[in-house]
Image (cartoon, rainbow, N blue to C red; front, side, top):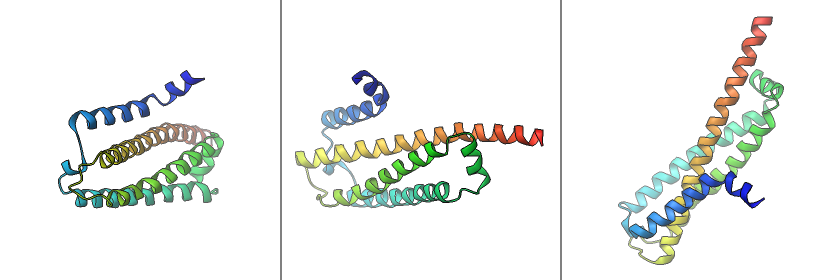
Length: 158
């Protein structure tokens, strides 16, 4: 059972491990980030933008059952999987968009161990969030290919 868990989350574990090792070896602290407040503000704006897009996608897939694309997803029996993934990513996006607000509590000259731990956690969560987005995009591409193939077959028949 534990081996299956490790295999399933190996990429996520590797990301966290690399971030921790890199941050510890390079002694990355909040102080080492140039234009700290501007960087955080830009990251937060970008994350809020992504949250809006993901929440919109979740709303569209959940509440437009009469759409031809959504009907094709239901025929392929992948509509619930997409809704589940989009909901999960929506929660992640909202949580991740608030993380820079927590980072604003630290002074840009902070060199404390606690600040370094928070920065490592923020970086890890930020990278995991983008990993989940990449996984969703890849999954969407596979599903979209199936939908297009299915639609092409139906048009040839009818």
